[in-house]
Image (cartoon, rainbow over all chains, first blue to last red; front, side):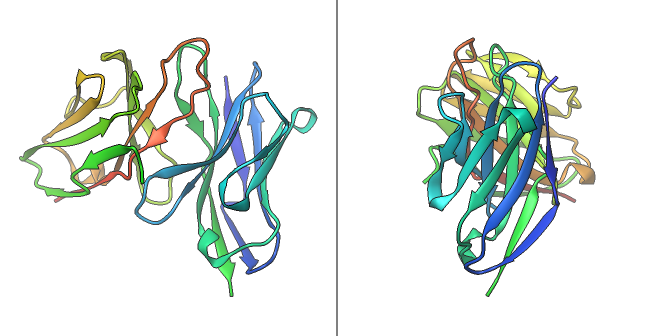
Length: 114
Length: 116
């Protein structure tokens, strides 16, 4: 069965600093992996996705993630944090195939200090 | 702007009320979903409709009743809810649920439900 684990429920960085949000997955088949962002009182917006085409995936708002099969990881990074990046971030794995729904990690709240 | 539209954005109801949440998408997706999200928690799957048929019910209490009138619309009928049902209810859609699907979901902005 697929699952994801997000390390760190809360990450705080200074504006301009590197953002690193960690996600490890467990899957018995090649996974489809996603990062979603949720701003307060809003729905979830897709940041990026891994669907086996390329291991380094670039997303919106300057975020990227690298799929590392040997480490079963899909960490999200951004070179320079902006105040507007403060939000909740969810890593998710898709069951794919005949059941197209997502299994979410517990989320990481990103705070950005001025 | 999201392409999945949910109404109402906010709903307050008593435990004896009957109300409905509505969701609409015009992306031609054939799978639609209801998720429930409590504060500081990830979304939890409630129901999945595939080609307008209920394909997954995650053991949701019968006071929640989903309906998919057509491929663009998804409703969630609410009756005799409890205060602990207060949450953000998210609708989502995706391409055909088949072997080629990556499972990417497109979410609406949610309906914030408060049960008094």
